[in-house]
Image 1 (tube, protein in one colour):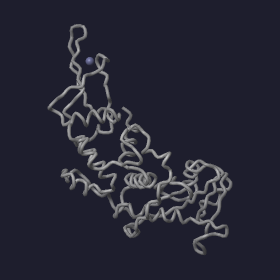
Image 2 (cartoon, protein in one colour; image 1 turned 60 degrees about the vertical axis):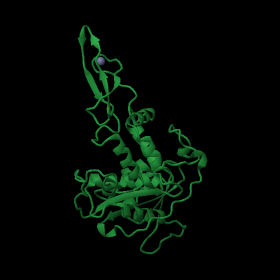
Image 3 (cartoon, rainbow, N blue to C red; image 1 turned 90 degrees about the horizontal axis):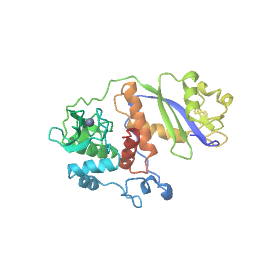
Image 4 (tube, rainbow, N blue to C red; image 1 turned 180 degrees about the horizontal axis):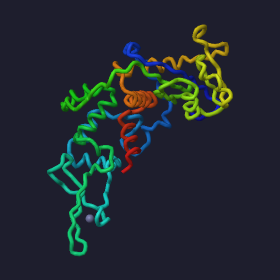
Length: 306
Ligand SMILES: [Zn+2]
């Protein structure tokens, strides 16, 4: 949200379980940005004219363990090489039968007549590092997750163990969420907050919205000083009107709330889990025109640089 002159609607909502599960998803807008589309570029080399991953494509990739690993190394989702912690030289990629990956990094060089034996997981430092599922299971799981299946459905579908501590969280009374959305883009933020006073909301506004931006909000008192902080602030009095005299409304934000609430878990979750649900919702929203599996792999590569 950094272009001056853009229009952002903001607001806060207490999300309660009674509000959940009654919304219908809106129809995705058509992509008109063919030339800038991330799918037509990037390093995945399989993209032609918005070609998207099909489950079949993935299954072909996963037929042979060695090919899976080569592919993941080429995509830099797994490290291509690893330095030995003893001799600081390149380790060797060797086959093994004591790991589900079937390969490991290995060094048995001799220094000063003393042989050392160092081995490492091929997952070191990667997005796969902390999981005890196989590489194939993780990739299939991720593919299904990108299709918006929930964990229980995916576990059932993939025949994975269903007793691995999956739980739906603890009941909470309701959680305040503060959010904003730009009128002419998919830029947005949604943040779980303990209070919705000015001291809480203003730093968030200043973090996410550039000074000079037109902000449309309801008449909540915490927003009354926005003009002093360099914003052009307009309000819609929801007890009287949906659109103010200038023709402005918070309709896009209201629609966003409905969509977000429909995606939150039914019995409420603790704050740190709540934030991850909001993050998931925003990620799906902002990438709605994209191939989510492709986007996910790109993000994993970026976050866990190997
Ligand atoms: Zn070594």
